[in-house]
Image (tube, rainbow, N blue to C red):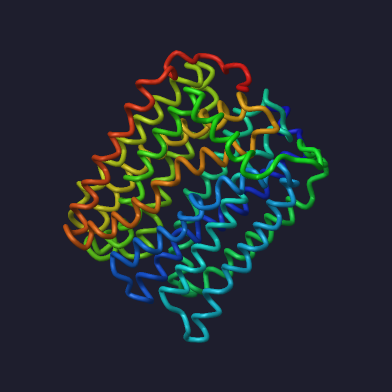
Amino acid sequence: MKGLLRHIDFLKLWAAQTFSQFGGQVAVLIVPLTAVLILKATPFEMGLLTAAGTAPHVLLSLFAGAWADRRNRRSTLIRADIGRAILMLVIPLAFFMHTLNIELLIVVASLTGALTVLFDIAHQSYLPSLVGREHLTDGNAKLLATQSAALLVAPGIAGALVGLISAPGALVITSLTFLASAAFLAWIGTRELSSLSATAPPMLKQMREGLRLVIMNPLLRAVAGYQATSNLFVQMVIAILVLYCTRTLSISPWLLGLMFGGSSIGFLLGALSARRINDAAGPGPCIVWGATVMCLGFLAIPFASGAPLHAALIIGAGLALSGFGETIFLANQMSLRQAITPDRLQGRMNATMRFLTWSSRPIGAILGGVLGNALGLWSALVIGAVGMLLALPWVYASPLLAVRETPALAE
């Protein structure tokens, strides 16, 4: 731990990620609130909005991975932050010019999602070269702790900002956080060396190489299968959860912010304990057990009822339990992936995982909206929460439970 706390460039990366995560988490709540409160969006429109933000993760991931393996990853991170900062300003500008509509929100969500693809893949691929493989679990746990803190605090901030300066106005703050992230990334002193020569293979060949690595490795394949299946049903829930909370349960924006913020205690506890649990059980069992807890937590959501505060507490508790399991799962599977993958394939491995695991997200989001319209919001939530259990056979039928130590590099 002390090694990374004395690693100046890691601290700069950590600071950049802190600003980026806080801004991103504020936007995650404010953009759909803009659609619900200002544009009076329907369940189907909410599904389309959610799908617009996730579709680039399917359409661009493989290309972004090959790009990250042949470009300077830090420069990619900086440009993605600046681009997202500009896009966040489009919504308040359109609002004050009285031209804001759901179509514009969908376009902004799509473009922001595209830049987020580049940022996330470059970020995941950049960490191993910055801190070394021996510090990956510790580094990922610290970054996830920041993400958890953002999940804990940002929703409350978002709810307060919406009440004080309106949803579009709050996105100006989000823009500034992305710019701060870019500034810290530019401050990193370590110069990255490209793992590819000037005569790099064609993009298509590189993309196939990444696909082959993930599909042929049983550990990577199991993680990808679980995430692809669970993401389908998670997005069914996420696409209509804000709508269900505000319209069916009468949860106010500020209480909604507190609910999501309180639920993030689970993420924070998971991040703080990820390294200890890994040391005690090993990466494989942590991945399987974390996945199980994550699925069980979502089962609490459809049972929320009664007064708005009571309903918010039930949903918040379920999301907190799910968040604890998800963080244990994410920290260990990310470190396992990074440790067994050669540096020259980091971008393509991360991109292939993103492509395979996020392909189901737009489908789930649209399906949630369609089912919400056809069957009602509560019925759609039940289908999504129960359906998550279908993801567990991927990890229980794999060799993950036997993996007590990090395996050797995959080739």
